[in-house]
Structures are given as structure tokens and as C-alpha cells.
Length: 103
Image (cartoon, rainbow, N blue to C red):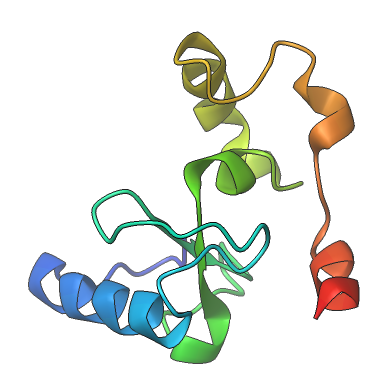
């Protein structure tokens, strides 16, 4: 998440635009994901991140929580409790360079 959030009304428009651009699919595992279920991920987050389209991508919740980013660690416990990821999730973590190799 960049240091400055978009107002909710603008974020909802941005979110749908990115989801449509990514063909309503997770860009990592290619699963079809509904707008209400998808996560719009900031490729670069924190102080370096922006809300520009080229820094955003659609991910399913599983791929999002398994992304190698310390900012996502809080989501993992909830994902384990909901059965989205297994308790032995560490071997499933992925890095952005892996995604680059798949495209």
C-alpha cells in the first residue's frame, strides 16, 4: 500500500479498471476471480509505491497472501484459519521475479 490512499470512490473505480485490464484473472495463477473477491496488489508498496496502473495487478487472495512481502504477513494467519493456505505455507511463498519468468 502506498503512503497515500486514494479516496474510496476513486479506489473502487481504479480497482475495477485493473481487474478488467487483467481479464478478471489472477495474474499469477490465472484463476478467474470475481471483482468482489479479487485483491488489487501494489507491486511496489510503502514509500516507493503508487496507485498508478503500472504498479497495480489483480491477485486472488491465495496468491496475494503467499507473496513474499513482509507487509502481507498479517493476512497469513487469517488465510490459514479460513483454509485458504495450509499451515505449512512457507514453501509456497513466491517472489515477483518468479511471476516475470511466467509471462
